[in-house]
Image (cartoon, rainbow, N blue to C red; front, side):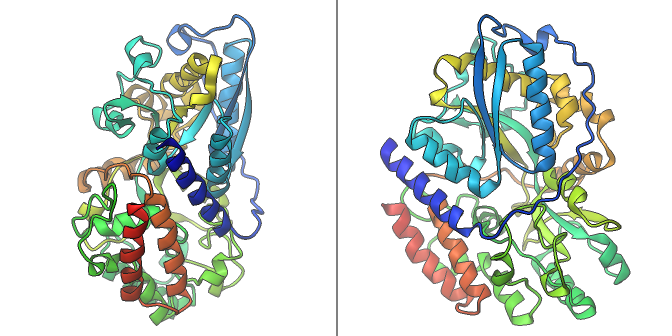
Length: 455
C-alpha cells in the first residue's frame, strides 16, 4: 500500500509540475510585522531541548509575505532555544508537491513541513507523517484551545497527524476600483448566474475578462459539486456520483465563458505561474485581454493580493459563486503543520516547533494570521488588536460572511483523487480551447475518474 500511494503521489506531483509554465517574476513584498514581546515564556517553550545542537529542515509553500514572516518566527525560535537552527525551504505551490514527492521516495522528507487537506490522507496512508496523538497526551503539543471540528479535520482514523495553521474559506478577490467605476456592485453569496451576469457586464463595458479557477480542480470541482449535495466526491475505488450528468456543473461555467467571450484563455495562463497570487491576472496583466476583474483564492491570501496589486487598486473580497452558496461554502484549515516520519532523532523537537507555531503569542504576533485565522482561540484573541486593516477584513469575512452561511467541510480525499483532479484540469484546458463541451468533459471525467479510482 505504501509503495502504491507513493507512486500515486509522485505521478500527481509530476503532472502538477508540468502545468506550472512560465517564470515567476514575483515582485518583492515588504512584510510589516510586529514581533511583540520576544522574551521566551514557559508556556511557549516548555521542555524545549537546548542540550546539544539540533538542525532541522522546515519547508512550506506560499508567497513573499509568508516567507518573510515564517523565517522571522523560526529565527525567533532559534533565539529562544539556543542550539536549534533551521534550514528553511519555501516554494511555490506546484513546485512544492513535486519536491515533496521526490524527497518522500528517498526517505528524506524535511522534519517540519506544511501540509494541505487535499494531500493529508494520502501522506498518512503512505506512512509519511508522525502520529501526534502521543505528544498531545503527554502535553508536548497543546490543542486545548483548538475547536473539536478543526482537530477532527487534522485527524485520520482517530489519530492526529497535523496541526491547523489557520482557518480560512474560499474567497473571490475582485477589483473594486474597476467595478465601482463601472457602476457594478458585488454582493456576497452570489449564484453562478449572478456571477456570470457581472462577468458579461464587465467585459462589455471595459473589455476586461474574468479569470476562473485554473489548474485548481481540487478546489473548484468539489465546491461546485457541494451545491448539488455531493459532499463526498470520491469513494475508495470510484467516483461518488451515479452518472456523467452529475459532473456537468463542474465544467459549465467554463463553457459559458468561452461562448460569451469573457473568460481568460488557457493561452494566457500558459505564460503564468499557476495559482500564484503575484501572477494572478487580477493584478498581473498587460492589456484588457490578459486582465481579470476577479480571482478565485482563499481568504488568508488577501494580504498578499493587496501587496501585489497595482497602486490605486482596491481589492474587495466575497464568496465564490455557487448554485447553492450555503451548501458550497465551508471553513477549512488553510494548511497544516506536520512532522515527517523522516524526522528521526529530531522528532520531538519538531513537535515542539509545531506547538510553538500553534500556541506562541510571540510567534503569532509576527505571523499575524497570514495563513488564516489562528486555530487557537487564545492566540486569535491576542493578535486581533495587532492585525492590520486587511487582516481584520479577512477575520470579519470568515466570521461574519462565511461562518453563518456554510456547511461542514467535505471528508479528506482518498488515494487517487488528486490524479482525478489533474485529469479534470486537462479537460478544463480543452474547454477553454474550444475543443470540448461541458457535457463531453463530464462524460470523459466520469469514465476516466472511475478508472483511476479503481486501480
